[in-house]
Image: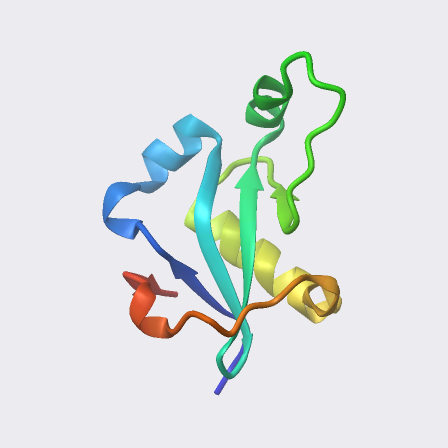
Length: 105
């Protein structure tokens, strides 16, 4: 099988337009090898700044910043990061299966 595989938990609820407008997507999992998943979060710079507010820091494992948050940008970023070995340093889970997801691109 070819990896990485990208899954969206709540794809029925988000169109690309809504996702771009909100500036984040927090329902994405990347399958990096058979049955091994990494949870990732995508933000654009404006939404990240809004969510930070007056706090000193914002930390989420698997946080990836994009210029525009949509499926095309997510796919490109995940592919590039996978090639660079980024996901080797991320926490993984094997407690979920492909059946938990609505769509696979």
